[in-house]
Image 1: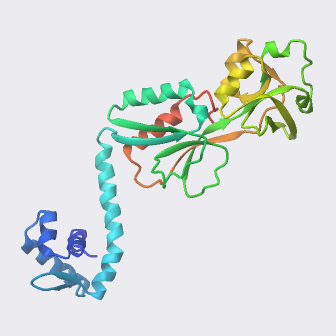
Image 2 (image 1 turned 60 degrees about the horizontal axis):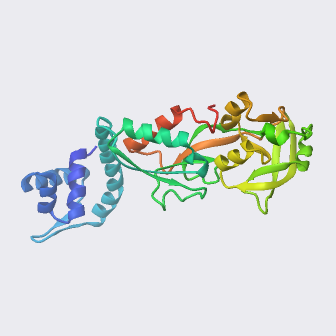
Length: 299
């Protein structure tokens, strides 16, 4: 098998089309580079390069060999770089996109704590309900709720989001509590991303499923706003369990139809590639997995 150092020298010479320039890039004497190339050609039994006084060019066999060697060598060099960086502190710019629901103070506190723990990392945080193309937008990681249609990304499951049917005591005064999911059609509801303030809710109870039409005075694009209007007594809401459990315990909300809830909605951290993750992304993913989010339940 050819010496990898010799193969690296050959690739550099091919890239620069010059022995002298490659020698400078490798910090090696020209005579050493020339000799190592001759050793490689002798080992392979082929002529890889045509040498003239002015330049170096690849033979047909040399071009094939270069094409096969270039990518594996680049991967080896990148692996070495990653291992070297692993001994250092996380640093550099981390681009993150999350849905609007994570504009909540608890997530911002989490990011703040992460920055304090890793002061050499900078964060570019994009809060939007639009599913950005991670590669086209140069995004390092996204938090996404629901099934992922894009199989080209790597997904790390963070947990699941389950939603309860809840209402404030103020709203329930003088109203009959729903005994069945179909009764929700008779109530004012606070909805998420509803069209013309009308939408459908899906609930499950064991193997039983129900789908009902609901409407009401308020529709919002994020759970934080919807939660505020539910707490202020404007209607029944379908809110994340982790977000409303404390309010239920304190009597600020009442859980309706306690045997029913939304189907579990998976929550993922997604990123473009599994290969050679920057250290700043690796430590962020670890911190995110360990964070006790009010918006999902860990598996």
